Image 1: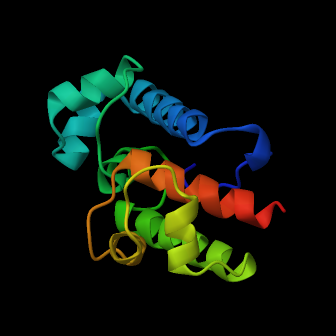
Image 2: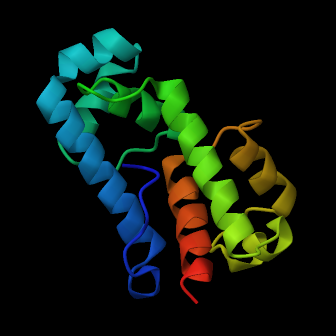
Length: 143
């Protein structure tokens, strides 16, 4: 699940975390069925097929939450997103990480203000960005 703890964050990479998310999404699509996922989410059928095939797909965190929400027993997509954001904010609090420190620790070109907007849900976040942010917070808390 997107908001589960990352096991041994010092021994993994954001890329591996992202791949694990994609694998979980592929399993969800396989169990629910691509057509049913499309019907329930209105996501692009080609993207859903690519997810099912285990391909690296450029998608938003919202897209991923929508896919996960189609599985039996899962909360709705909005609840998943709220849990993800809460998990990030709690991780920042636990690790005593401010947004500027987080921006410095993330691989990539994300600026502090953009990260803050993404975490708060005021801006779109790709699944890859989420993996980098989630990993950086988990690694900081693992110290």
